[in-house]
Length: 185
Image (cartoon, rainbow, N blue to C red; front, side, top):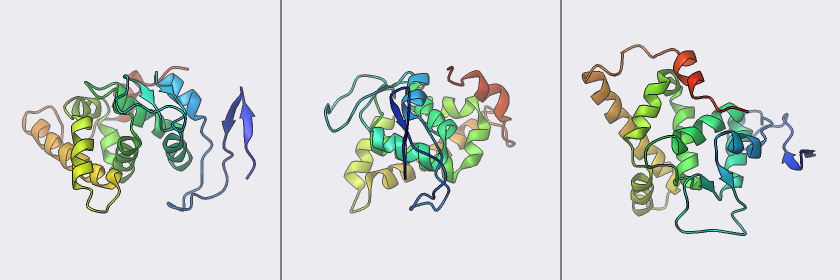
């Protein structure tokens, strides 16, 4: 597989299939998407801190994996759900990125809630979920455990919001709420 350079950044070509999902790989410039979302991307093999500053990501390989499998728009939504929600901007860990991505992939109905999805994530402590997932991992990848915990939390919040009248039984259209928070180029 050949790679192309765009503005000094390596961009993966589209065309072949992802070995895990079987879906066609998509071309995705992770540096551009990260920049649009206000995320500083670092090489994880060269510099790693146990605590991170908000909007710092040391998981370019994870971003590349998500971008190839789901495309730039999905990757941007994953990043925005983390960095644009209360107290989660420093949670750009590989496990968290994969858990949020897989949740959105398995529950596409969540994306249709638009701005309410961001309001749900405002109420979720992603750092606490990641730490809990690490203690519960029991031989499973942390991202898988975290995805389950995250899905349970989203379901709990959906029920609360439905009872309080904040969440309609029919999903909100994507366009007004979601495009209002779209990253700018």
